[in-house]
Image (cartoon, rainbow, N blue to C red; front, side, top):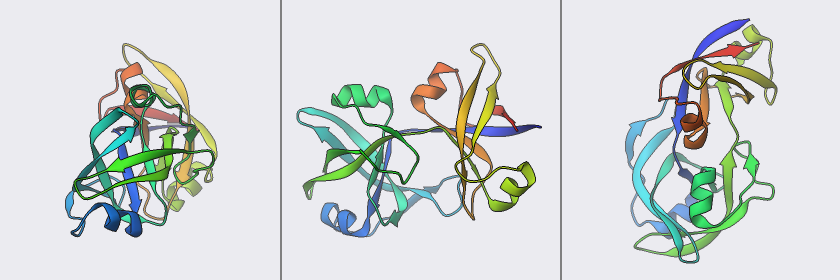
Length: 186
């Protein structure tokens, strides 16, 4: 079965707990814009992530607040920071690295730095229709000048919107732009 889906390019970003958010900011998180996954949004807040003197400014805080801190970067970002975080499924922070988060208010060290694995979001109805389940691996065909087939992990959530999520490194490798169409191979 071949299903056309949209690809979304995910830039570096951070998910925070309420406790961590309150240590870093004095005011409530404000939505800047909705993201494609239902209920998720980019906030107006940004911060700096640091490893010693190596840093990346303006890392976007994504809402809503979670029950764990997770900082998602690309391999290129990891090189800037001189770190080697593991590739993990969102929410799997085993062996994740510590990183310093800095705002005008505070500077704190938290665990949760990862490179997010490629994944295909979907809801339960999509998964049933496609005959897959959460954490299954699927193939995605990318057509174009730098075409190829990649593996991606299925991520089933109740509010999931069917689409492929790639970090900026993967998108650049295949010359993919946000909202380009790819083909899910089941």
